[in-house]
Length: 167
Ligand code: SF4
Ligand code: SF4
Image (cartoon, helix red, strand yellow):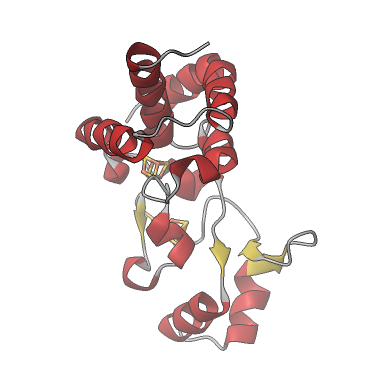
């Protein structure tokens, strides 16, 4: 994965793909789930998370209570010591997030706690969330972080513009 090239492409396409997602908030084709599934199936032929890990390098997951209990036990810390060592509480949302990026558990471009990773990481990049358009803001924010999301939204835009009247 050429992340330098990805960053350049994301910078170039961010505005137009963001505008497309904004539009989706108002005009959602009835066949949206089918379109998303079709586009997403093509994404994973071209994007390999094992060669990327850009989400772990540039973003933070949120750690819910169950995540903190499970992961702290896995690394041999109490939940309190785990939070003090690695996390901070985001003021606005009250979410527990990593103090620093890249994530402390990223080792050799792989997740060092894969079996017990936060639910947020297991669900990322959220392409299967339903309804897809309810996550437009998330996808908009992730366009510059996730090559899979950038590819999905780019392909979805092309499909929608080709198959639907889109003014
Ligand atoms: S916990 Fe694992 S998957 Fe989640 S951000 Fe850290 S390294 Fe990545
Ligand atoms: S989810 Fe996105 S950012 Fe994370 S490793 Fe996969 S392609 Fe890269």
